[in-house]
Length: 167
Image 1 (cartoon, rainbow, N blue to C red):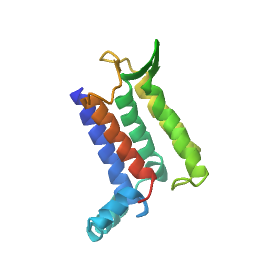
Image 2 (spheres, helix red, strand yellow):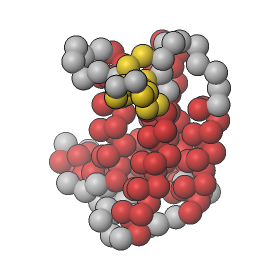
Image 3 (cartoon, rainbow, N blue to C red):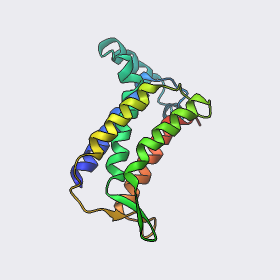
Image 4 (tube, rainbow, N blue to C red):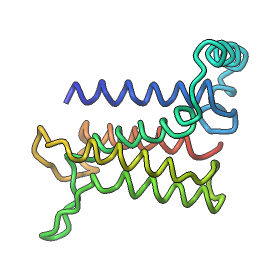
């Protein structure tokens, strides 16, 4: 479980760095940086990175979504909702969420541009993690009592939403 937490942290950190230094100021995470007064330093670091570590367009625009899809899949994989005798695996949520967000972008409900590559890379990332056998037994998702798994899942969802909605 600790290894998974480190993986989630590192992948979200990479995604956040791409959003912070390579993406426009209009996304929520960058609006937060601006409100915290981290404008000039962020610009200087972003310019330096763009000059010395120029990333291909797919890494700037498609990779962050695939990274957070991996994080959500890791978080959702051991969880399920129980409705009577039926169990609904939460591991099915990340690709559904990606597709919904992309269609929201197409309909201009959220910022961004509809991109089939986002869906394709995210589904590949999801399949990669979803098909790895679980190391821990499945557990029911519960909001109360609050567990580390529910904190982790809600935290990752909040970070993902910050990348898709403006302030």
